[in-house]
Image 1 (cartoon, rainbow, N blue to C red):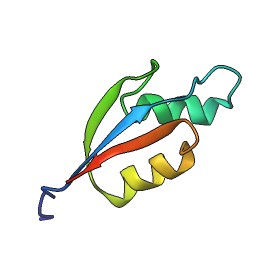
Image 2 (image 1 turned 90 degrees about the vertical axis):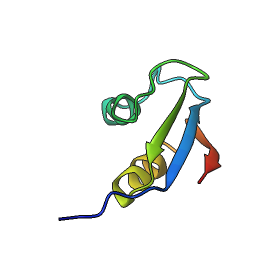
Image 3 (image 1 turned 135 degrees about the vertical axis):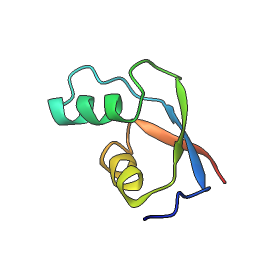
Length: 65
């Protein structure tokens, strides 16, 4: 059984998904973001890091724990 990570990462949406490809919109929704300046604290996993990398121009990392 995989150990649950206690590391977290907080991201904030800084860009609009308007006129962006559908996969980028879906990635934002997958991260729990869909409105400007909304923040989410997520578990710091390779999958989440990959999603942040895909929409890095639309989000910013606020805090890493």
